[in-house]
Image (spheres, helix red, strand yellow):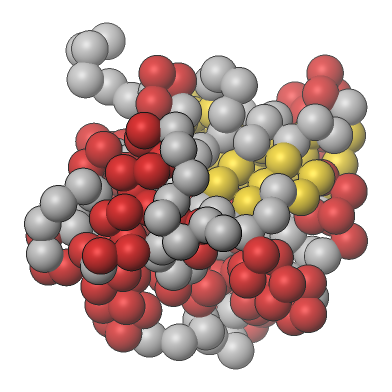
Length: 253
């Protein structure tokens, strides 16, 4: 496998498993990750042998969100995040069920990726955070998939505070569907994929269409513009620099 691969894909017994495999940068949504994930999703959805898609990960972290090393400097139009809304919408509207498997921390865009899934299985040790506001940016794009899934007042508090929350709270808030011991994630995911694959393909696709009929929350074009504007803003660049330099941002009292 080429060294530039950051996503591993396997297909077995009707299940396509897309594994985020870039532990060196905490499986961040880098340009390479976004491109490979978008292509792998397209392939899996076009393959008649695939009945269910699973999003999994290697390493301790599920996904840390956007690769902040790529977001330092540049104007809003140069932030290079335009593929991410397409990825979220592809997962959200996919005619095949998508299962997320999270065994460790998920932050920002990583939480959005999970929120777009149909079923999310989380290890008890998994943690989550909408960390954007603490970096001077806005959870704009992911709000399109997070807000339809989560209990509104819970999402409101967690998006405003940016605080870390555990799997039990994610379950109560609607972000995840099953919480199990860390060594039971694979088994729980298999139970879900078997149950999903027992449905007829066309019936599953139409059922998912009906379930998603309410639509995404907000226009991705508008949300993307907001996100890119804050990434490029003075606050956004200061927050990214503070994160990389492991220091408090200037606005922290």
